[in-house]
Length: 286
Image (cartoon, rainbow, N blue to C red; front, side, top):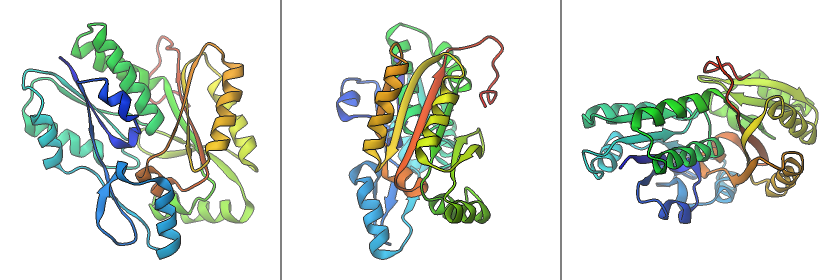
């Protein structure tokens, strides 16, 4: 059987994971207020910001160690192929560490796939991988298909406070200052190795409209709305999208504490997978 390993920033529901014996989760870690590190899925996003407000100490996040990866990989029968789906390398070194562990495992069939996305994009890839396994597709076919799906996808998000991205070194101080002073809402997107700016608008509502326009610029296959402490906005956005795209599967989830510590509160994001077009190359979606 082909197995899927995914990190906890995918925010997969417990009942979903429990339904699939060949689906395994590995946690990222987070330390609040200078305290001990805990698993990403053992606290809430609300606790992340309550701790920061109380201590003014930036939460520290860490990826699974090579030892943790190898322990999980080695728990799977040696003859079974493994596909690992990780958080984007822009936010974490998880993918690179997984590649080192995969090489050290000396498995014949093991692939590490950088999702180039976060929770919703990872969820979509995991669901598609499991569906292909159930259809009886082979390891190489599934890996190739997942890479093609990534090439036909985009992850966009609108942060309310840019200081979290700026502190993590993911955007410059100038961009953070401009956003704070002028109350500009940048619509950011994830490239393969950087965060790009899709557009700049004045309000979150206008930013959501722009994300919707981008999503609908091509035929949509799957769509996911992600939020961080902005559930009401997320639900409203999801309902609006469902009314305009009645034949598209649209899901919603809250970002994990690790993601929250990097992206900040009151965030609305969108992960889109478009119908495939002939000749599409990876990175050609923006």
